[in-house]
Length: 307
Image (tube, rainbow, N blue to C red; front, side):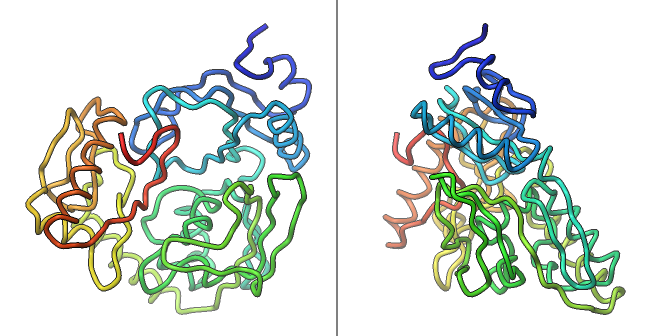
């Protein structure tokens, strides 16, 4: 019998229809290719699996994490204690009804953009080139400064950490740049998006321009987690980091990208400690030289912002 700090494999498998993994390396699931093991990783097949996992985790006093596409995420080298819910199996669907898209939280965001374009639907161009899943994109209101996925959400289903299932309407939701009012420990299950009919050729051209710009300005050839910091009001984090001379700064195999100052890349075998050290250096120097405090956009699992 395999057991962790809380629960056992036999117990989990008696509760969950989906796959259950013990001490599963999270580096396999993050775009940074960094991170130690998750104590438990659960692949729920349906709502009942999610409810059972949340209920048992609470009963055992275990922390719950929800894994999307693993972008925008830095996981501690030692891994994390608790339960990681991976929704890529049971919540990996998208259904279109005219201009409405009903999408599971585990569905790929790039694939959703592609499927919308195929149908001549506009409203998701702001998410062009953003990796990850729809659930993660909703949590962070993925997009640009001008528009985010939250702009087209009309309904959202989530499970609160107390096990209560809720359906939120547009009026209940508040989205801002890189954030939402969704409860931190809730599990997003499904969203309904209200898109619009558009000119398919114009949509394709818009997306093509955005992808070319992304390729030219972002270090996509190395593992990374996307933007490390939120852009301060009226400024760009990458420009501030460049201004204080930190492009190319390196700790171990982690490097502040020479192409874009707001990206840290993994040049080989970077650790979470390496990345956090660069985060601290960048925050400190930008604050000292410009008076601006950079806020993290990347999420931290199992480690604090300060060492």
